[in-house]
Image (tube, rainbow, N blue to C red; front, side, top):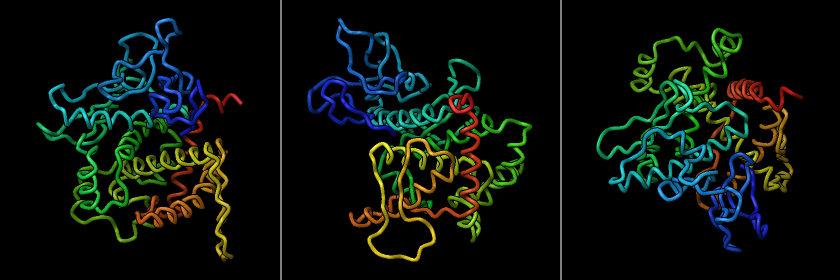
Length: 343
């Protein structure tokens, strides 16, 4: 994530800001310019609030009164107006979706709406108050159980499933990974064959793999080959978990660079072979550069988190196998970037 300043008083504001706390200016995010702008009055240039400003606490701006923004228009289904709890979760999910879309746009990944073509990207943000909801992806449609926006529910599920990390944004990043896999790989292609070498043969029966995973669990050595236990279930899930992790890392490194966050290493002499300093840049050349900034940064962030009495902010260890998968995804993402291919 980038950082932003109020265009009126130049005080620091956030991506989610709808009002400057210093000067009181009404603000919103302008997606076409990727900046925070002032909401226009009647005499100003068109910069109006999204029609979901109240319902979804959306701070994105549009050009016409009553119009949905580029994020909200991707949502196909939401809770009904009588479901107050569901609507509360809906606003939380939409906030996470806006962050997701910012990063996808920043990475120049293609986004085609369900309104534009069959199989286009759509979000079903559904309350499970009246009927069961399964979080997942199918044919461009990402479904999220809004119970996941409840921190207590999410923590119970995290503990039950033995996960080190569980967030709404993480769910969306995982499911968008499923969406992008066929787009980035193509079929048949050399990339598809390379993906099978790294992640395994996805043509194996998915239901059998899922049944086996929930009956037997992950293999004992999963940490050597996968970014999470769940990734060991099936190559599709390995891809999605790794893709989500890629988005986690790229976003956090960008944020660190935007805020000038640097780690110069511990104040004691160590014998570690790997660098312990982190100097993030806004545009790392490849995944090696990303990880060179990322790994030392996580050491410092985890130490700070422990000092606050909290769990590690980044409870993962990246092995050579996982780094190879991340590098492969990074290569595919960069190949989709027109601004790089034109250089």
